[in-house]
Length: 325
Image (cartoon, rainbow, N blue to C red; front, side, top):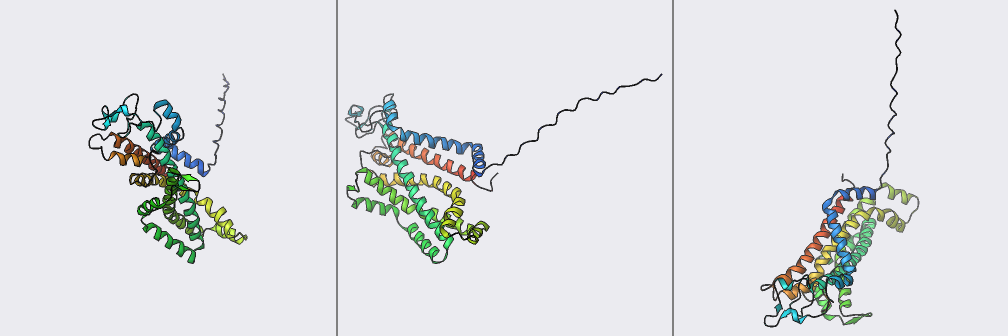
């Protein structure tokens, strides 16, 4: 007896679709790396919050504080000349206490002081970047006597006593210059001095990068096609220098904040009653042994700001590193 067996083949599973391969731009690669760096992202969030606090200082003051220059003598102990209550007079009405001179709200002065520090730091960084990039890229590309002259100027400026020059310049400047008056004149001087003496650092970095890039094939190709030096500098070299320029600009801002605070501490910053973190530290030196709160608050503001910028700058440097993972 023959038995016929009917074989039934199982239906084949549909083939999995081929995984789509997408190219990623350098910016996308850098962003993916930065997202994995939680410390750098935290620093970036703090930086963003500080910038927002400085921009919306009037709103924050009206919601959580008092007018920045409004005195509150009732908050000062007339016998001791110190804020009433513990920790510099901190209370629900005065979140960070009051200053020991006039009883002004420290919270409002910290927020408005952030405006001064960040404005000076960003503008001075802009001055440094513009001069440093132009000088560095010219020195690196042209070489020869151009490189020698620019390099010697950098050496002189790096050895120049910036702090003494700033104090001397502030002491001889008039109260009104080019339509600016009072603290605006001081801020302009700080921006120009800090920015001018800061450009050699980025100039050296850009010069070294330009020395390497000028020997690359794409520069030779541009020359062979008849491109002039303005085209090569601006269209060929400069786009390849964006990453180190961006990283250095991020790292120089906290240095500028410290410079502004140091000059304000020494009396070469903005004029009172315009609030400044360095100025607040200077005022706190006479009472810090009795009540250190007025020194701790602006000191923490400077520390947190500088730390946040440094953490974000370090993370940005790693993210933009072409050899990174």
